[in-house]
Length: 101
Image 1 (cartoon, rainbow, N blue to C red):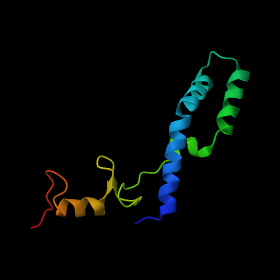
Image 2: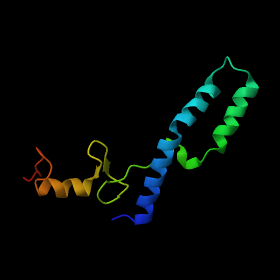
Image 3: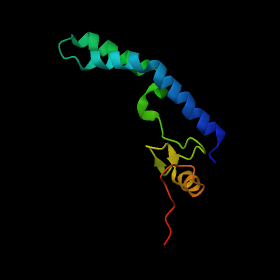
Image 4: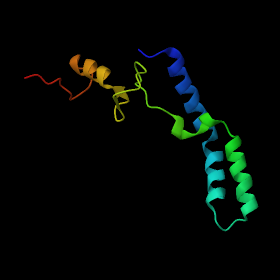
């Protein structure tokens, strides 16, 4: 099980990303618009740099929903490989059977 502080940090980052997503998208659109004057684009760049770093979606890290484990994460199920195997062994995931031969 991951440390609760790390899991809480990821939850906090996800909330920041959601809160600032529209503002960041608008600033990025201004920055990439070549028809605008250079001064206006530079001001938008400064505003984007002043925003919280954790509001960037790149800083999010995928973690298991049950344990918080950051490695061996299956995106489709939002679970780590260990929890996926445990749930499959107990028959909790429909259609999935642990293989044995």
